[in-house]
Image 1 (cartoon, rainbow, N blue to C red):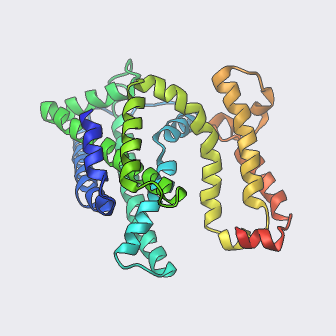
Image 2: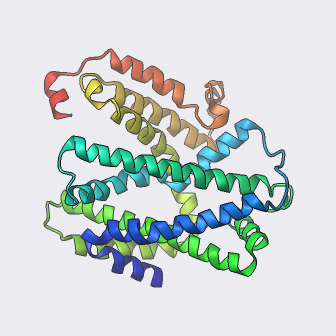
Length: 307
């Protein structure tokens, strides 16, 4: 209850959201993670273990990566980030794009450092805690061994800040989107309250239940979103063909079969014949083929202009 009350308090003023996240919460989060990672690198708990085979690592990483919702959240956050950049004086398209590219570059470097550091911590403890399979429990044990009681306090700060920045960003982005969708008939502040109350209600279902519900949905959405992100870099060149739509459609169909197979146990043996299926990327080649077919199908001039 208190968590969502803080979220509401920090989100209710739309103009302050980016400043709160960018100037206060995110720096504290990054500093906390840097302290943890440097300690783990300087005084590792153990040696780097053998680990799993490459295919298993990639597959597990992709599935768990879907559940972090990083790409989906980025699409949502882009709404308030671009709006904030415009309010700070980046008016022109090129000027705004340049600012966004700089921000993306810094974010990419920091994320690479954080995820690489956490991967190193996991690799050096795989033989120390071989019986631990719960990620949250493993992380708490690693931090306790590295930093003692103070580390557990640091873990609380890290988790709290990570959850809070995500909660604030998604709440604000959702409210902004629906405010635009409703053409201002429902105010941003009203929508923030609605989203916060709804989120609080859903949170009481329990983490395991939320993951069980969200996991197949994310598995369906992520390949499509990944394709759209890639195609966005070539938007001007793809306006006059059906490459994005065809690739997304084929990827969605393949992931539908894959989700029915993995979640509900339906037998679709042909999936095993797809390249990269063992890595959870069976949709890639069919999407590429579908995209190539769509590339040679021209769009009507009116449809291209509307896009």
